[in-house]
Amino acid sequence: MQLSKRYHPERYRITRPFAKKIATIYQSLTGTETIANSETFIAITKHIQETYNDEIMGLPFEQRPENLQLAMHECSLAIHYAAYVCHGRQVFHFNDEITEQFRQTDVDEIKAGALLFPYSSFYMSFGKQLDLDLYGDSRFVDGAYISIISSPDEKILQILLSTCPDDSHNTQGRFDWILHEDKYYYLPLSLEIASEPISLVAKHALDDDLAHTRQSGERAILEYEKMGARHRRAESLKTELAETNSGYLAFLEALKLIINGLCYLSAYPDDVELRWPFDTPKPLLENINRAQKPKDIQRNTSKLTSMGYTKIHFCGRSFEPKYTENQGLGSQVRAHWRRGHWRNQPYGPQLSGRRLIWIMPVLVRQDKADSDQLTGHIYCSNR
Image 1 (cartoon, helix red, strand yellow):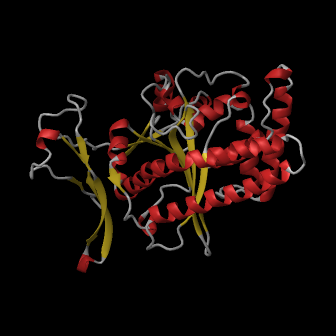
Image 2 (cartoon, rainbow, N blue to C red):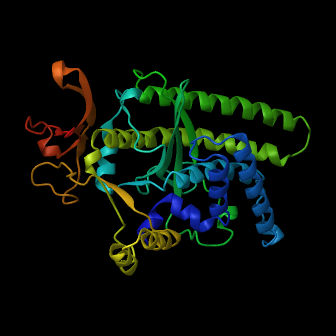
């Protein structure tokens, strides 16, 4: 599989006939802002709805979906994709080893003010998490679109959790985006109180979102049922409510990956290497390296972009997984993890500064579980 197709933005570009157009609309109406104004939202929704109506005409009537809310759901995803494109298509790739370490690292004490963001909008890729089936329909968490809304009055962290299908599902068909809804979970988090733990902010936001969805959904369903007939909108509301309930725990676990990833980018920027994926066509890379004029570099870069290739931020350049004595990666049955955490460590003159230090988790064999010599690895920043 082309490495680039690991990333949701590239899969989105391939499967949506309107992907290029919505990015153009966003850039012309919103520019470099990370929050779409009402004009942008209306224009993108209109274009998606028109495309949807045109596309379903190519489907037999019996195959057309009953869920009439697809266009609205698609619009939210489209807005985040468009913001990602307009901010330079920045992808941060976390490999399987470091992702596993994140899953074993606690983030309960991370303060909202400790997080730094490399770009206003970007995508974080963790790979398919087979234990995080977001809505129980074989759509697995694989990454997140991240964007920051900053103003004198507020600072909002927007998270849109993306998913990918199982390996048996082919996402190349013309009607795939219509017949197989691209599931996601969106949640904005307020970072106004810098001293508040980000995990607590997320928990409160999730609880409020769940309560609001339940109340509004149940109220709307009741109103429809009073009409005395089966109504399509009532059925779709029931589906949305069930999905919100089922996705709650998966999103909480996925947040651990996202917060750990943001901590990592904040604390260890020197461990991130920007380079082309290994499967990028070598002739085009050679053309870029040989090019003498900026326009030649841009022409070849644009060609690569049109083929689905872009430079990727590979995270963990000097990262080495920490395992116990005589235990290599996958060499023995794993017993249990000694969990990691992040320490907000003082440094500098009179210890006036603070920086995040990762106390990494350690994989401990059962027969060595009580050994005093098995301690967490301290991963230090060079800042």
